[in-house]
Amino acid sequence: MDLALSPPCAVAHDSLRALRLGVRNSKVADAATLVSLHNEGLERPGEMIAEEAAAHWIVAHHRAARPLWLAMSRGVPIGWLSFLGFADRPGCATTAELGILVRASWRRHGVARQLVERAFVAAPALGLDRLIACIREDNGPSLALFRSMGFQSWGRLPGVIRAPDVHCDLHMLGREIPAPKLWYV
Image (cartoon, rainbow, N blue to C red; front, top):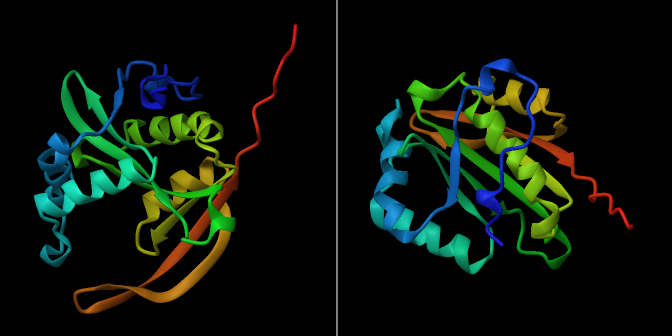
């Protein structure tokens, strides 16, 4: 089952109704696209990634049966959402970290919200009952988005993110995903 191709779930914001967001599972051939999206708006050149690294990342997602979705609007790639394994411990297999990136020109148009909504729908079929987001302390828009979608603070790791010339705190936000209700007729 291709969970990325499921229809978008209902959203509360009127601005999203006009957004025609296509989402599909990434392929190794998408490595250059993912690199372009990632590197486009970086203020810190030390955080750039190479195409080979992106290709390995895509393969790792496929091997782990964790989706890496590519979001498109009218055939143009505008973002991605990644389900990352939370920990190597078997007891953590039902938890995934969401990684998300939206092209700068598409931010504040509901793309990230729609991707996270789709992740909520896909989570039970992926065997997930908890989703987490690990967000840099200086990323106010992402913190606000996830909090507005029911994620709560599950922890803070002081200074664990090292960017050139600065250490940043990492905020861990999490949300339980209830199992879908089954209806029998």
